[in-house]
Length: 322
Image 1: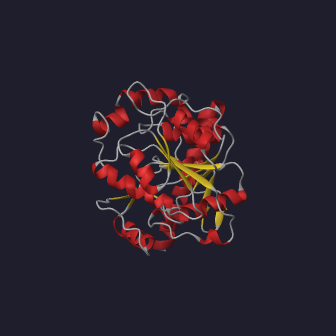
Image 2: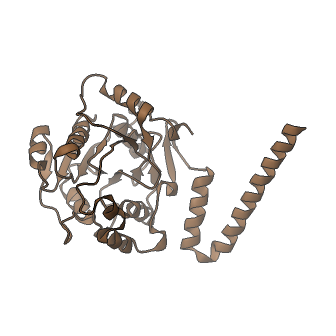
Image 3: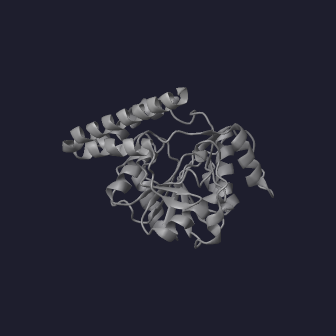
């Protein structure tokens, strides 16, 4: 599938979709060094989205107030934190939904550069659905310099992503677009640690909202960075005490959803249902967790699928040798 190998050049929906009135929010890390540089790149790109989006910077980390003033975006300094000082996801989402001007919101990690296809994609989904959660895979890219937001900057960045970028696995989600009030309650996850993003997918599906994988429609550029801002480094993000709490808060065994749990895909042809083997197998596994009595039947179906694939492969080899 082309979307797995090259960044999207998607944008045709802007011709026929209503504009998405969107509030974008994030909680930045301190604006210093390389992290500061890439966060400034990211937030600046959000201010250039059209239709214009409201941008909210949450938290009081070093430099956040100054960057908010410089770029003309809103700043909400007071956020709830855990005993380690890490902002809590439920508090961030509650605060943003209370203060946002628009009914559609997008949480975006502060190192993600967004291009014009983002609002086009959101508009396309909003035209068809009133309740949804949009996510997608990101493109990992080394960025060491401030982006120059001049004419043609998007095309230049797409070319760089196409040449040097790497599509991240389906387990990591760096943006979430949703209508206000989608989740009735979010556990107090530590932001930036493991599991919370996967739970948001699970929680949306539990609430009955379609989960839209917009990978084929949105080029979300993740600017690679180290984990010097986390006490204990990258290992603490996945295996530290806050990560352990996040896993515990995830609760049910099936709560760690990925983009393979998407119920809809957004492509240049519009919304479509995922019918590839990876999505179908993942859905069967989720059904087995939700309904244990179905497990033997689903196991039988997977065995039959495997036998059919082997039969087709051998038939093809026989025909090729005939």
